[in-house]
Amino acid sequence: MSLYHPLVVGSLTLPGNLLLAPVAGYSDRAFRALCIEYGADFTCTELISAEALIRNGVRAEPLLRRADTEERYAIQLFGADPEVLYKAAALLAPYGPAVVDINCGCPVPKVVKTGAGSALMRQPSLLGRMVEAVVRASKDHLQSVPVTVKMRLGWDSASINYLACARIAVEAGAAMVSLHARTRAQGYAGKSDWSAIQDLVSRIAVPVAGSGDIFSPEDAEAMLQTTGCAGVLFARGALGNPFIFSAARSLLLTGSYTQPNTVERLHIGLRHLLLLAQDWGEKTACLEMRKHFCAYTKGMPGGAPLRNKLVHAETIEEYQALCAQFVP
Ligand SMILES: Cc1cc2nc3c(=O)[nH]c(=O)nc-3n(C[C@H](O)[C@H](O)[C@H](O)COP(=O)(O)O)c2cc1C
Image (tube, rainbow, N blue to C red; front, top):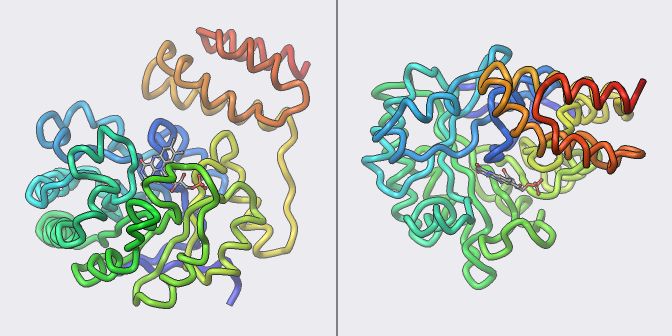
């Protein structure tokens, strides 16, 4: 079988196995729309607080909505109380997610101090009850869409327990486990340990999606090859680089790929800005776009002076003029 192949997640069959990871602050509707256009087989919202959703759903609305080009997507929830998670998942019905994912990997203090995110891995039985609750909510309110979990290796190097947590999650009904092969203590530093992904693939009966250090099409190929994982999650490697999906697919299917040139990169960046403006209005979009444009221009010859100017741009016209000056 080709390394690029459909991915079966419970009752859902995805056309391929190149997936956009949840990336808070980046994987919003605008960015997801571009990733789909450039070949991502599945996308996921950033983590959304189950508590906040129940208390004030309207505020989470922009984060929850599907992009126009997204035929299907996952919504990721975080929380530490199974009943809260049940209620939050039930509220997702109007958005029609194809998957509900539970965050068991977020390392951010604000999240872990509530017992959510990667702190759930310190309480595997609670993690199991969280999955059960969302599976129940899915049956009751979401036409039984698959429930998945995304986790890390464990809390720290002294408490690596991804296998126990994954087994509990699968027992509770999880249809796929995504493993970011770093501990909570590592944050995003150091190398991710792909041997753990390989280990998990051989030990659980549901598909495993691998995450960690996917910065190029070659990285995705290497992860699929060496770990045997069913799918690959692109996170930091997709920022300012939504075309990485079509490049990876081309590499897997034909053995080669082309990269967009500077003009194309800037053009896609400007389209990204227009999509953001549709959702957030021009002012906020221009502010939000600064970090994205840093990513689009990363590694671009002469990109540093352009970046210095772009981070002060306040209108769409200014962005367009700066890009036009750069590539007349
Ligand atoms: C800025 C940032 C935000 C992230 N937000 C989320 C999130 O909301 N939910 C989640 O499960 N993982 C989140 N992650 C983790 C990524 O999905 C991914 O697992 C991790 O970055 C490892 O992949 P990489 O080394 O290829 O970037 C985030 C990562 C980064 C860098």
